[in-house]
Amino acid sequence: MLYLNKQQRHELVGHADNALPEEACGIIAGKGERVDRIYPMTNTDKSARTFFMNSEEQLKVMKDIRNSGIVMIGIYHSHPQTEAYPSAHDVELAYYPEASYVIISLRDRNNPDVRSFKIIEGKITEEKVVVQ
Image 1 (tube, rainbow, N blue to C red):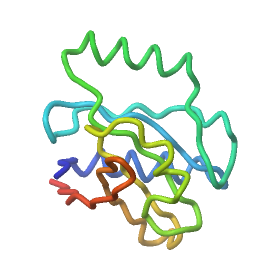
Image 2: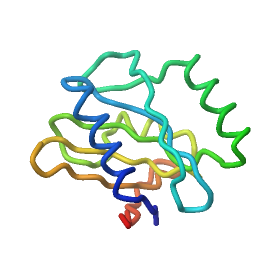
Image 3: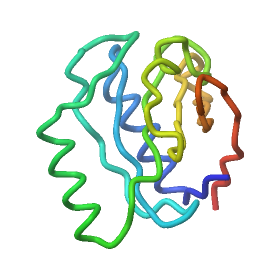
Image 4: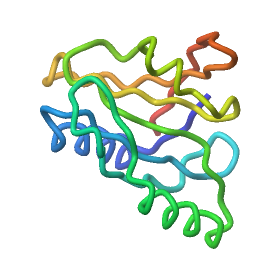
């Protein structure tokens, strides 16, 4: 389960929308299942089908997370034209079994879909996203 507040969900969807036509990506940090911070990142792939985070930004974010006493609990990215479900490429790049992989679908821009998954050894399991 992943707990977001309404502002955090709005931030995720807003980042995805602003990145169009490319995928947006970023890091989610918090404690346990509760999100404390969202870190939007630059998609250096500049692609509508893939993402790769800027490594310098990643280093800064990981230092900030550590200094804030929280941990990385997830990675997010958007699917501008497809459903909020991990692609084969997403599964290939799922290196953190403890992480939640959050996908924001903008296929229906009037009704964005935010879903989260655990991906362990290629097995995809959806987890509930609770917005409070």
